[in-house]
Structure formats: structure tokens, C-alpha cells
Image: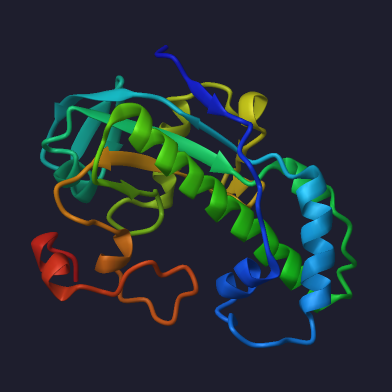
Length: 229
């Protein structure tokens, strides 16, 4: 198996405003800001976000599938995006199982919600750090990425072949794939980074609205290019 790289010393810098931005509530005073600060203080003490990744190469392409390091992925959109890629970077990132140990009463809905957003914000920060380091290490320039389950054309069941590229993921970074192909802990994400000549985000092909995770507007021209309705 090709070398697997681990990032496990990712700095965690988090402010109340960062969390409010993730909540789409930035720029105003809120009564629960003290709760957020308490949770940030607790999270920063234990948070150990991690990313595992590898350099992979395309071995074969068919009409609606692509073979990466001997593993077949079925997705016409993934195949289309990777047509001209020489090397790609599969990854699995997590905010860390350590955050699951922060105690919150299930009767305290606001505190539970705020903690969920704190975890999400830590994961997003880890991904930004990873993307920056990846681009610098491999001189990638413009990059794009895709995640299984973000589009029906690359369904969540494709988590299974992606995880198989890494061996025992749970032993290495503490992320387990469930029978329904969800990740545990929940604040984890997997996908593939690749060099790209155009800006591509799965959100451009998705009409779901509203969506708190949206990173780009729906683009009908892109949807037509990829034949997504």
C-alpha cells in the first residue's frame, strides 16, 4: 500500500465570532455567546483534529467509473473531473473523537446545538489547514474536491471504496464507517482533492435550498455541462 500521510498536529484557533459565522449569525450580539465561549474553552483543551491522505494515481477509466490504486469508483461526475488528472489526493478528516467526551445534557438543547457547531467549525478549520498545506507541499495551484454523498451521482455508498484505500482508518485516526456508510464521529468528512483548471464545487450542481453547508450557488450552466438535472 502506498504511503499514508497523517496530519495530527493541526492548530485549533477558534473564536465566538467564528462559531456565529458558521451559524450564519455573525455581526450581532446573542444571549448564548457565553455558552459558546464556555464550549470553545472546553473544546480547545481536548481537540485533536486529524487528516489522513495519500497520493494516488488513475489506473483506468470507463464510461461511468474510474480505478484509483486498484479500487473501482462508480461516478460519471468523478470520472469526468479526473479525466486529465495525473495525481489525486484521497483524504479522510475528522474534528476528532476527543470532542465527543465534552459533557452536555441532552435536555439543554441550546448548549447541545452550540457544541455541534463548535465541532463543525473545528472540522472546517482543519480542512482549510489541510488544503493550504497540501497545495504548498505539492505545488498544486488551483484545486477542487468532491465528497461521496454530496451528489446523487457520487452516492454515499462510495465511502466504502474510499475507506478501503487507507486500510484500518479507525485505528489510525479514530473514524469508523457505519453500515449505512456514515462516519463516526459525525464531524468527519472524506473525499478527493484534485488539480482543476476551473472552480468546481459540488454545490454548483445541487438545487437543495436552504442549506447551511452550501459553499457555492447553484450554477445551471455547470449542471448542464455535467448533465445533472
